Amino acid sequence: MTHSNELLEELRGKSIFITGGTGFFGKWLLESFSLVNQSFELNSNIVVLTRNSQSFLNDSPHFKDDSSITYHQGDVRYFSFPQTKFDYIIHAATDADARLIAENPLQTIDTIVEGTRRILEFARFCGAKRLLMISSGAIYGKQPQGLAHIPEEYSGAPDPVHPASAYGEAKRLSELLGSIYYKKFGLETIVARPFSFVGPYLNLDVHFAIGNFIRDGLEGRAIDVNGDGTAFRSYMYASDLAEWLWTILLKGKTGQVYNVGSDQAISIKALAQLISQCFSPASEVRVLKKETIGQSIERYIPDISLAKKKLGLDCRIGLDEAIWRTIQFHRVN
Image 1 (spheres, rainbow, N blue to C red):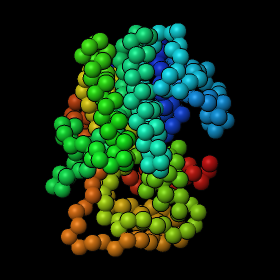
Image 2: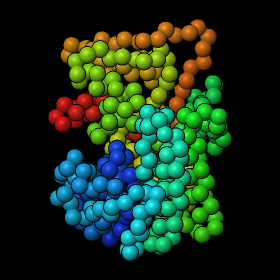
Image 3: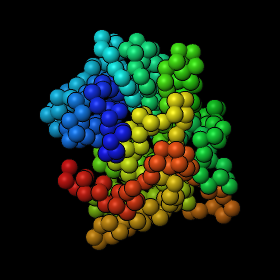
């Protein structure tokens, strides 16, 4: 997290409520908050909405030692409102696991939409100054050929006739709800649209290719690329992610949307080869499908020039270092 005096002073003595605090994004937000809160004696606190705080603390016991982080039990769709004033809210709840979305798209929609409406009502109830909504690059739908990087003003969308679009479409609706609450009630909402990430706490067993490749290498087996390897992705390291989210919350323009991620593209095949070289001996890379001549190449790469220009943000950790740090974390843990 950035240590600029201006940002730190924005947090001094403040109360923050966070949903999704026990997931990948949430853990990094908590880790970074805990570090600066203690190091700079900010006297701030965070309340984390969770369905099972004990399970989270059993999994991450070091958070037990930080009295500035407490927990409120409940489901994001219908949690009881804490009778406390909060200065800031970060709404990061939602499981992006493709398997869960495919198995129960209706539940995915309900969790995102009903949860967002509930947290917006809570923001009004508790008098929150600002609300950061964590959306997704999935709201853009398929990235067109010829568009190397997706800017915030691109108006594409997921294909609504496919149930797999449930996540992206629900995130689009959640953004609309935030806009309505800003226009109708004056609630200061800011939207972050994250893309792809790597770092400690990343689940290696869900549908994220980079996590699967690291898992395969750690287990000493061949790294399998399930497709033809031609798709392009980009990956931001988790500490950069945390810094960007805190900065957008505190300094982002009200009503504005910011892409969050790296703009450095790499093919899935090249990613697998890069990860394979982190192990000794290097892992075998197996591409399981042949490339079709003349096929369109899938891309999922953000344009991040807005956050760079307006907020002074950048990607500080390169992909090689990000992968190495992630591997070392999982070796130890």
